[in-house]
Length: 211
Image (cartoon, rainbow, N blue to C red; front, side, top):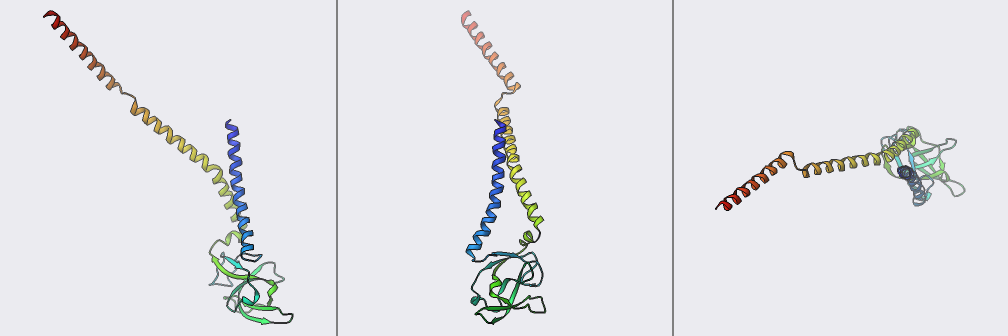
């Protein structure tokens, strides 16, 4: 019976870990829909936007129509042939052929401007910044270690808590038994009192009989 209970507990703990992971994935997919962009968050990997954005920051990105982006907005865009997204501030907007808008951007800490990028390559506009959290994306090992720590805590902590509760119950039970049990001296004292009562009664009866 104990083995079955232990198996059920392990399955439950593993299910909790899986649910936590799926929750993160669900939040990511939900933000993609809510913010109307394929890239709802991006980690800042360089200091090109310092001091506005620091390395390790996580920025929340909202997809907006190209005609709503203004000079001074921070945008996230793909810059081929690079395989990662760039987070820079818009310094110039160009209307070129084929009814497309091109954006010229520049990092706040950079001296040179970036090459113009088409609106097709823009993921959206930065609307919020979360410090430090971006390191989880920049260093996958940190995220893996964090997941392992959470899993270990979920698997071990309930058993540890159960042991503490069990020990507390045993301690309270022992204290109640100790308080409820009569001591040797109290028993001895009660016995002596009973003997005195019996002796006094006997002597009283004897005196009445003699009279």
